[in-house]
Amino acid sequence: MKKVKVNINKKAQQRLNMIGKEVRLMSSLDHKNILKLHQIYRNKDQNHVYVFLEYAEHGSIETLLNQNTKFSLADKLSIIKQISRALRYLNQKGFVHGDIKPGNILVDTNGRVLLGDFGSAHPIQKEAQDLGSPAYLAPECLEIDDEDFDKEKSHEKEDIWSLGVTFYQLLFNSLPFSGDSVYEINHNIKSNNIIIPSGIPANVKELLLSMLEVNPEKRISVSEILSNPLISRANDSLVNLPTPPKVDAVIEKDIKYVKASECFIDSSLQTYLLRSLKKSRLVLAFEQVGEGIVNFLKSIPHSCI
Image (cartoon, rainbow, N blue to C red; front, side, top):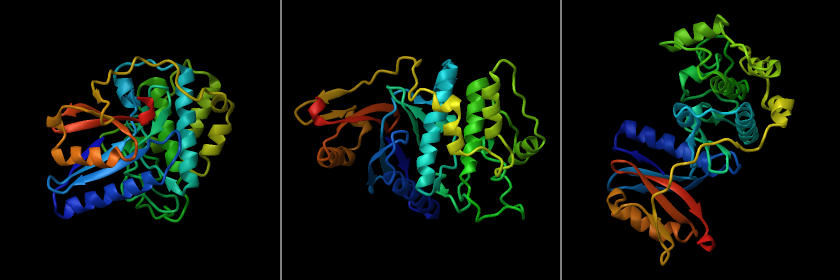
């Protein structure tokens, strides 16, 4: 569960509008590699918005990398395959994600990869209003004030660049382009100073460079990625993963509800969960992740208990 504190002012209203946009998009998406939105609840008294999301037991790819998880090449290719499938679906729905990076790619207990955080998503034919993380942004996004930048062009290849940066990070545990500012990052990209360490297969290098093509018109498309033999033959799930963290929750079978300590769930939210989510035949699990915050862990049908 994602909890967002909202104060009633102009900035907060903008934040609410952004949350609303993200929620509306996520609620319209249904794909096995896209994080599902289950419910949204706003506590008007405390000015909090609670967004209930599908639980990914392993957390994000970023977290796994920070934990020194060693992904096999097969799993790295599987990540690219699964996210490419999510992007193809998103493009078919007319949208660009806008913030592909390891922190927004999650993994569940079955090795299924899930794309999350749609706060920077925008229609394919429109420029992004909320830019994603600079280190992962495509060069054309870093030059939106350039007179040659065509705002009416299709922008789906922005995500391919970001996925390429993510692929590079998976392969070499570093970023291909970095800098202390957007200007410096853009300068390094334009200088074409990408360093490919030795030791990777030639076909993997070729795929990586095709994703990190500065010219979006020459950059590989998501369909071409999925038809690449490396990707088409890749596994549909990750196979070499560490044991996920344990869920500390108590099942109350009489009400089919799983809860954390009451001090971490305010009474109005708890009432909402019992009345509303129980009706949707979900079993809820929570985990304390910080003061005043609970994390939605998973949902399972009553019949599974």
